[in-house]
Image 1: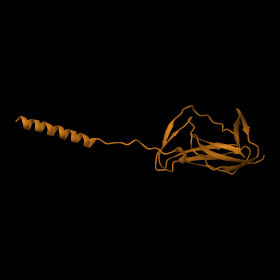
Image 2: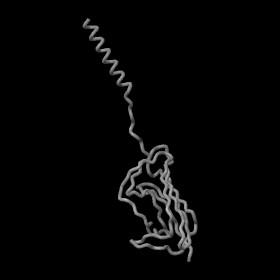
Image 3: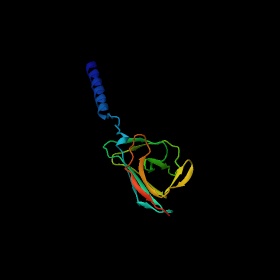
Image 4: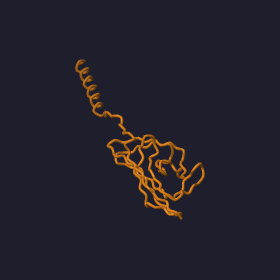
Length: 160
């Protein structure tokens, strides 16, 4: 009788252990893609800007890969655009961003979008500057290290 009781206990232990293994699920750590794979484009609602007028600038950053991409930001502003005149940056946009440093996951096919009504003004050394008539290049940017910028879009600011 003792042998059959020991055998039953051993069988019960094996069954319980076997059931426990059947319910365990192994998980692999998530593999993330490189932020340099994000594609950013910029579009503007007009190619010419009259004094006192404005145009809508749209910055679109999409993850075209099959992997999620972790994106670390330096503030609550995720995207911006730069304004160049020739090879020189003409100034910064006038915007307020919270000093948060969020990290987001951009899933495959997911995008960040941002629109800005731009009136041809920038901030240079803390002063508001109305850009002079001429051709300027706008370049969209996801504000995170390693993310490429968009192709430039030319905007002509007309004389009054």
